Amino acid sequence: MEVFYTAHATASGGGRDEGRSATDDGKIDVRLSVPAGMGGKGGDGTNPEQLFATGYAACFLSALRLVSGQAGTPAGPDTKVAADVGIGKNTRGEGYNLDIELTVSDHGLDQAVIDDLLQKTHQVCPYSNATRGNVDVKLTAS
Image (cartoon, rainbow, N blue to C red):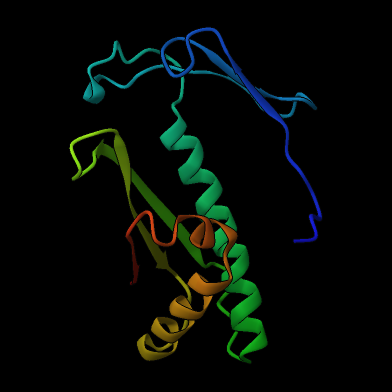
């Protein structure tokens, strides 16, 4: 694989439990907290699932714009991708896994067209390729 770009980030402190995560260029520097729903204190920090969700949503939207443009049916300018990323114990009884749903809205396309584009986009998006075979990703368009 020819690498076009590499992001660099470092987690420190307690990791997801009152730690920090930052990029080497200083553009991202966040406090981390375990959500109350996971048994944590809640806190003011974000968590890895929120960071993953923001990255996946942005990447999938970019891939959708690419795929829909190449297909001659560009997604509308107000298109949004919402990513829901859940975490829980995996079915093997050891470790954890993610549960992901991507919802595309305000795309301005017929349902059959957007459904086809979502499947094609799911083949192009790097986040989709990274999770394929490990995580089921539900794709919907409203």
